[in-house]
Length: 267
Image (cartoon, rainbow, N blue to C red; front, top):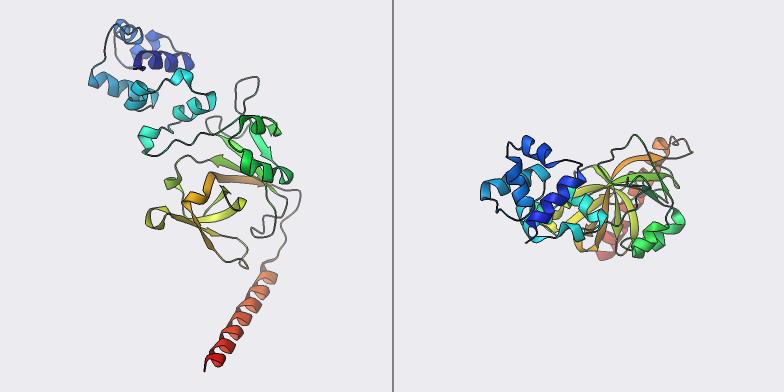
């Protein structure tokens, strides 16, 4: 049972005194002190109050030794990514922090993408990635930047750097939003997503470039998901709308011709 050490640990991480917490929760300081020093046992109502205050599930407060968890996992819990709250396996994210104990944004350039596919959960590998900060992004969320390749997401050009916010709960994926997905078979892909997890256990991935057909990605092929935030590129987007329309019509005509030939052969 880790309740006593956990609430003390969470309180101190917020830089609060026992008086601060007790006043907010309309609780006697001596009562809170008794809980933290394991000389008093909380009732169910007190457990609910403390669980909501720290945004950590009751089961976690009681069963998990938060003091022994790595910093990255504690940060996930504090953001609400709790296995008992979400009802799914907690995905542990390996991350880096600066001298000020604030999380960095790691950069996965084109040359590093192959290594990231196997080293994404390795602290040593993540620690050697270049890092930077973007002051306009929330400090309460985790971000990572990936360099994209190919033309499937035009007008976002080949070589652009796309930044994503780490997504813990995959059920929260919104249709028609873009995501960076680490897969077991294809490595890193950047696509517009259609969420079919509840119905079929898959995500349907769409390209912005209409020349590429959508396809389904099984959930067991997914390792990480990052929700698209923005991209950086030294290139101005090309006005390829008319060109793409012509190419798309050409492809459609070719497909139609092939189907007609196949039909004739079958007669």
